[in-house]
Image (tube, rainbow, N blue to C red; front, side, top):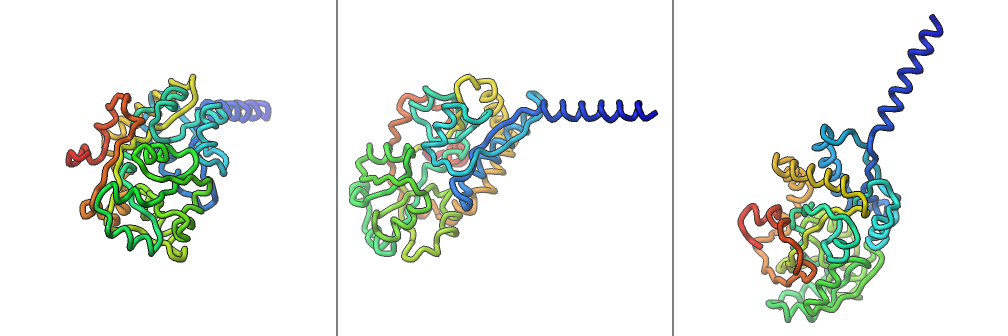
Length: 293
């Protein structure tokens, strides 16, 4: 009897181990700092896509990469295959499309292209007189290392400083070391709540700078099959409404707070998209809602 129980327990254990090991491990981007929540949304989107494809592709486990990598480092980690089935969302550039495997779905539905400015109290007053791109070009902007926004802004004629410390960029504008820190209107509210304690930090209430800015997931070369799974899952989630529901839960309050429709929108081109197949545009939020941009 004891032998039978031992065999039964052993069989159950082996079955459990096999079940766990059968799960495919996927890796989402971890934070740069303990208070950095910018990439939580990426993880939620990956999980949604994986859930939508569980029956077709099998079970999965989703983990985070180690904390501390800025964007430049994170993209290197993707390119070198440092983590198993590592998917990181970033802007579309010809180099990334060539060197990595993209998932050509704009995970923020294009809303990141609408930028509001963090600034100082003094610069906020100066911004009141801005009515054109030429006026805006008199102001110096800051962006992070490895952000493709720097290239887009410089191409349009803006002065751009680059910094490695994300949180430090809010200090830079508050201290008037630079004039403007442009942030997506979907990012604005959480970042304002996190940083409004900084002395002299403010934000502009009259302008939006817009450039088309689809953000795709990328993974390492050779991982085309798993990229196909993520694309299938995202499209399914979009079609059944669960993706837009998640998007609205994450971003609608911030977009409403900005008051997009009551601001002057100044637009510049994104040269990185000149030769990119524009199929992603059908998933842009404003394209699907009211035909703008």
